Image (cartoon, rainbow over all chains, first blue to last red):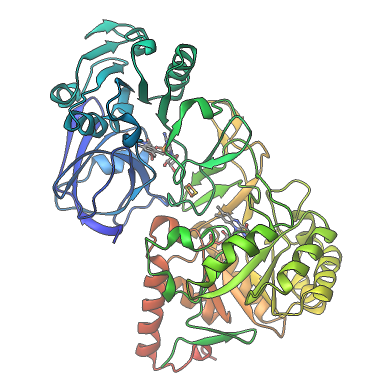
Length: 248
Length: 299
Ligand SMILES: Cc1cc2nc3c(=O)[nH]c(=O)nc-3n(C[C@H](O)[C@H](O)[C@H](O)COP(=O)(O)OP(=O)(O)OC[C@H]3O[C@@H](n4cnc5c(N)ncnc54)[C@H](O)[C@@H]3O)c2cc1C
Ligand SMILES: Cc1cc2nc3c(=O)[nH]c(=O)nc-3n(C[C@H](O)[C@H](O)[C@H](O)COP(=O)(O)O)c2cc1C
Ligand code: FES
């Protein structure tokens, strides 16, 4: 079933406050989809939405950053501990639209997580994407991207690695036919603005507070420019950047 | 031993219903639990006309609960009848249409359309705490609630539940008034009003300031209200508010509820309603109960 108790296979710190968790699953997922995770017996009410970062045979890999109680609880889990895993959820990246195109992946911080599987899918199509990853300080997980992208560039705000500055300074969207982006909202807004100006279509993976994750409760809606609501969990989390009103 | 029971003359496979607004129109959850095993499904709160709902943040997690400010986003009664109801019907459980409104006329027109739509039960939501000009007003004072319920009663001939707000000035007086105005049964409770402040932004989280609190945090309040109302009215009472396990459900049945609804709990575990049904069955077997109505407090 797409909602089941599973056993943690591994859970380790791979960067500052960034963890990689491996879980078993038999249901195939699409790049860009996400899951809801809740530790067995958790005192917290709701599960946490985490994007699928990698999928190999029957193993799912999640990359997450500790930002509050729920993610801290996940980070304390040991191999053998149980959690409820619901998913895969959401629509996933529009892979059909990418074939044969010059694609750029833009990730910011923990937002790089859902991009890895897109990079792998494009590499398999014989059409590897260029990849720009931005971090506030120490980069993480860039070595996982290396074998699956064309050109890989890194930016750090502190200058500890790669270009010193913002990820948006690493690329010109006019060089690409399509851009996929995930990161903090201000970054996604900036990337969408750059792409709009260059006339390059851009897809973003949005985050919003969720309860059901399946499209039933309507707490996770975002707005498009016409003022119509879209469910981030069901109609998204991936939307055309030009359609979303980031200031609603 | 059977979990089958009747609510307002409608046969239910079991007394576990899904609460309005937490289960969409049923199909959203179809891939995540065996929906056909449920006793019934209350639709998302409908209004005569479609509504986009509230702007800004709509949810904030709280200790053992959550605040929501969805604001009755729904496709409208006609769209529901044409597009959502047929799919809902196909799922198997009894169909309870939850109806809200901003004016009495809106309630009446919505109920008129639903009267011939082929739903099993109408649940009249007289307590919509999220919609500024809406239901909250109707659910607080018995005199105003009476106007809505009696007006709807004139146009809706099927079984009708009236869903009460815990914000009512006096829940027992409210229950009596709604019963007298034509309710066949009562369901309670809707969400309690609460609020949250984002300490970093130094602003209230919700644009409407207040939002509806649900989840285990409200359960003791809901149980007390159900207990009191059951003892004051002569009609079936459906209990809800924070039910997450079979034990919680049994508490409400012991308090005298004829059936229960599960809402927020499905978010933390989509299989919670089925676990409640299975737990209820084991409880009845252990105690040698034949029917749901045998689950009663000891004298
Ligand atoms: C579709 C989707 C995919 C995501 N993928 C990842 C991922 O791959 N890796 C990762 O580290 N994080 C991801 N997130 C963000 C992650 O869900 C939040 O960081 C997490 O819920 C925070 O929980 P907390 O208890 O630690 O924080 P708290 O701030 O204590 O959480 C309080 C409440 O707010 C909610 N919340 C807080 N921040 C967010 C947020 N950014 N998005 C949604 N809900 C939030 C929590 O779920 C909880 O209900 C994703 C979010 C979404 C919606
Ligand atoms: C997201 C959400 C949306 C809701 N929408 C409605 C609604 O449209 N109509 C209604 O009568 N109740 C609505 N409710 C209230 C629930 O049906 C229920 O009365 C309340 O949440 C208490 O039960 P619970 O703690 O089991 O969730 C909503 C609750 C939630 C959490
Ligand atoms: S989280 Fe419930 S509709 Fe998206």
